[in-house]
Amino acid sequence: MLNSCLFLGALLLLGFGEEAKSVAPKNQIRALFPDNFRWGFATASYQIEGGWDADGKGENIWDRFTHTPGNIADNSTGDVACDSYHNYARDVEMLKDIGADYYRFSLSWSRILPNGTLAVVSEAGIAYYNNLINLLIANNIEPMITLYHWDLPQPLQDIGGWPNEALIPHFENFARLAYQRFGDRVKLWITFNEAFVTCMHGYGYGKHAPGISGEDTEPYKCAHTILKSHARAYRMYYDEFFQAQNGRVGITIDSGWYAPLDPNNPSDVEAAERAVRFKHGWFAWPVFYGHYPDEMRIFVDKKSEEEGLDQSRLPEFDRYWETQVKGSWDFLGLNHYTTELCTYKVGEYSGWSQDQDVGFSRDPTWPESASDWLRSVPWGFGNLLRWIKRNYGNPLVYVTENGWSDSDAVGLEDDLRVEYYTNYTQSMLQAITEDRCDVRSYTAWSLMDNFEWARGYSERFGVHWVNFTDPARPRIPKKSAAFLKQLFADNGYPGPDVNSSAESKHWKILSFTYFILIKFMLG
Ligand SMILES: *[C@@H]1O[C@H](CO)[C@@H](O)[C@H](O)[C@H]1NC(C)=O
Ligand SMILES: *[C@@H]1O[C@H](CO)[C@@H](O)[C@H](O)[C@H]1NC(C)=O
Ligand SMILES: *[C@@H]1O[C@H](CO)[C@@H](O)[C@H](O)[C@H]1NC(C)=O
Ligand SMILES: *[C@@H]1O[C@H](CO)[C@@H](O)[C@H](O)[C@H]1NC(C)=O
Ligand SMILES: *[C@@H]1O[C@H](CO)[C@@H](O)[C@H](O)[C@H]1NC(C)=O
Picture 1: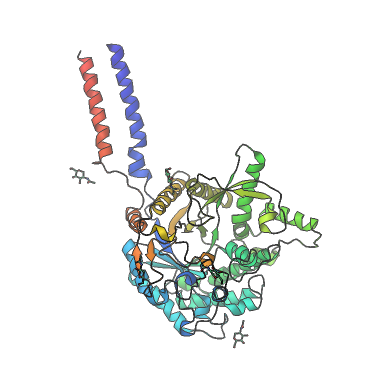
Picture 2: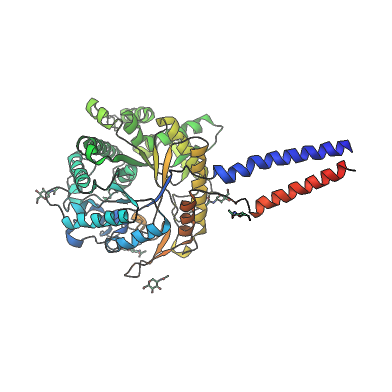
């Protein structure tokens, strides 16, 4: 009998210990974000505004690109898009209803400067953004502005676009005007959104505006100009505006997570590490350290030499620019969506995608979205955040985009998007609470379905469904909108409360065990 008692007692202790460890802290503490954590939504001017030639707006590269047949999957354009140019009050209402702390949107450069330069300033364009900013603030939603989200004024493309360093002073002028006109109320500035996509898809693969295919050299030149332009806009803010406005300036860099195909194969492990450095490091390394990552320098220099070039295809920052670019950040904006597997594979031609000697693949079991490049791999997000912490000294990170696409057929019951948001925010939470990554905000992409670049309206990323055949462009909340509203309100996952069924079940088991134990002891 004594033996039975000890046995039961041990079971009880074991059971109790395990429960105490896994249930109580996880549901009550570990699933909540830090108190000052902030939640928001992102959009981009060309994808939502429409009004492509309204009130004197100039032509930009996306107007030109979509008006050229054959460039967009469904032959659509952003001429009207969500018509936010006329519906911005409805957008603010949606943000208010869902409980967003802030709204990340971008400025259409050619709406403000129709030919890209200070030659003409459109007061109508400025008024549009002033109205939006004022309405956001009146609703207690902080504006976060992206200066450049891919819609370059066409006249600046006509002088060569981003591969031409002549664009640096033009961007600086545009940024100064934005700080002058909006900086009294706007305190969060992002200079560039995903320069990787601008440079590779616009000037390398030619699948995005301006549709130039020049993978060997043009993306590297484009990135170089953009990094210098970013640095100028960052320094100029501190020289001319910071004292009066006290805002913060950063850059948004996109990156997937890159994992070795075979974690036990050292060359796969090296390939994966090289892939993150070629992707995130291409832009972030200069911003943190003033030069491109060593792996990029070594690989591109070597290949350029083998090609018989007398100069590397990867440019270098001279002393002056090194000091300008290095440290040009108050926060790191991060757009993250997915993960790829990497193996060692010798590049077949010259250009960024081949220079790194990496072959990419995806695990077929990873859940698929409507976009061929996007699968759900939640653990990749946490790994990327930890990689950022390790490589850049735990910088302040704002997650400026994360989201999921589905097709027309899915409609309002977007369960996979809810799963994606659940899984990804939990992976981020773990990186914050367990690994102390300094992530302070999370921006869902996107507030509503919109013009998905070369994919037109065929891939929907919104938590609001937009009817693109209705001239009024009505927006209807999807299931994911209700989900994020709850997540924002709870600041995480509070878990079952003390009165929940899981908890009472635990107590029932516990009291039953005590009952048996006492019965045995009493004989
Ligand atoms: C788009 O237009 C091209 C010709 O310009 C046509 O071949 C193609 O079928 C169209 N695609 C759709 C989805 O309408
Ligand atoms: C913009 O317009 C001004 C005035 O008409 C002109 O001088 C300038 O060259 C134009 N800029 C570009 C990049 O086309
Ligand atoms: C989310 O995580 C659950 C549990 O691991 C998994 O079953 C599901 O497939 C995931 N869904 C997505 C979209 O990531
Ligand atoms: C979208 O709008 C069109 C035009 O108003 C209407 O015929 C259609 O039923 C709407 N679709 C949905 C799913 O509401
Ligand atoms: C749990 O139950 C107690 C007593 O019935 C009640 O006072 C309390 O409000 C409940 N807590 C929650 C979070 O529902």
